[in-house]
Image 1 (cartoon, helix red, strand yellow):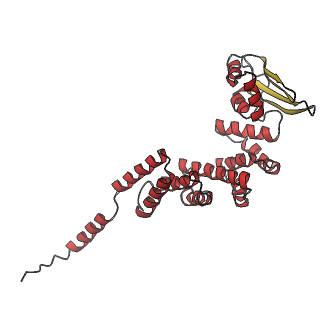
Image 2 (spheres, rainbow, N blue to C red; image 1 turned 120 degrees about the horizontal axis):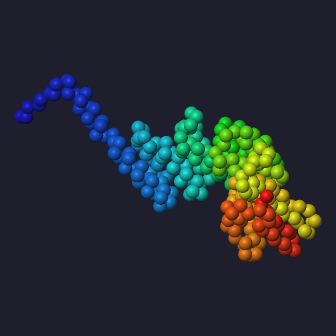
Image 3 (tube, rainbow, N blue to C red; image 1 turned 90 degrees about the vertical axis):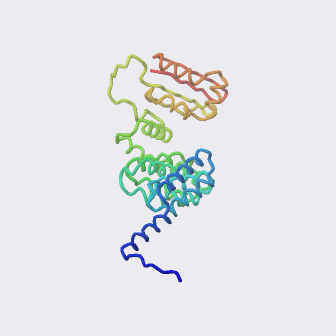
Length: 288
């Protein structure tokens, strides 16, 4: 008969911890799974991204990649045409991971993605729940509120554009990133054409070249000016790209490359650099 030996009592806690460590997913497994998720993102395998992110969030409570996995899960739903699930996932991500100021790049990306998705649902389907997200976003501090206002200003509904205007004008009083500031300026000009809100207020500023680019579109059928803009040359590219598609098509048909305009700016050319006349409209762009 075999002899049964009892282990000393002090060995029991050590054995239990060893068993738990063997059973629990390790950090290496977490890192490996995150690498697989990133590869699936690169390949745009959104179903696999969702599955991998869901597994990481469920099985690796101490994984340092949980925030990124939660964001990628929401992004995969968005890219996978699961709008309702994506709205909930982005909102949940912001609630769980982005309560503190300067919470990181994924929080900013999620905020922008949420507003872009909500804006698309409002524009295409008239979704009131998505509109509520944008209207609530207007009250958010910092860049989040600016992104919400920009998205609202991009809607077809003139009333929504008007609602966004005061928030955009208030945003210009802040020290914005240059690209965001340019977007805000263009959004304001589309809502309220006129002198550029971003023009340098200091008179007589010498630059050795043109300081303003001007665009005028006259509707000949109505004998009225359809568009008149003046803004700093620094906004030229963004402004020209914001022109209506039919005007850009007419420019292309006339053999005028947008790069020609940018080259004129770089060469400090003054006066008219483009003029187009059709049966319906007259378009003129000049530097001053």
